Length: 120
Image 1: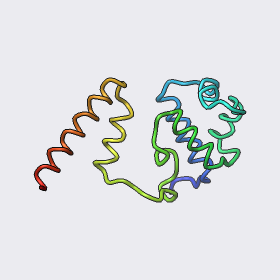
Image 2: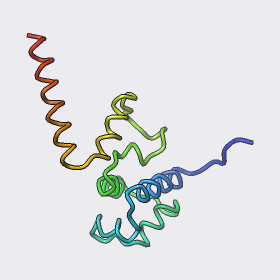
Image 3: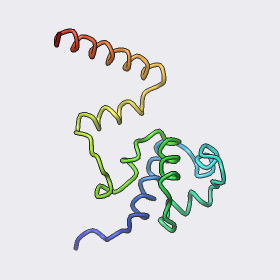
Image 4: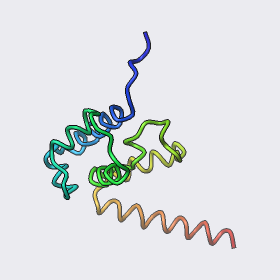
């Protein structure tokens, strides 16, 4: 038998839960990170797919978990999908320390500079 059908809120909720656990945050910690009127009960409802969230809430959660929004939505809802290399770079970048992110950005800027020199 095929996979069980799930609604978009259920899929999004599962992805939020997985990203939250990967970030080693509790629902309460994530709610505090988001701020505003967000509580651990709201996070629980999102993760269980009991309520649909607005775009702003989805963006706030993605930002707090330091993941791209595309990582939290079903494939069919992704408007723009980066190529595999871009996805891998995004994934690696989000896992790096701030110091390593700065180093990687400096290297990328240098490589871009070198490419631009060749084009002239």
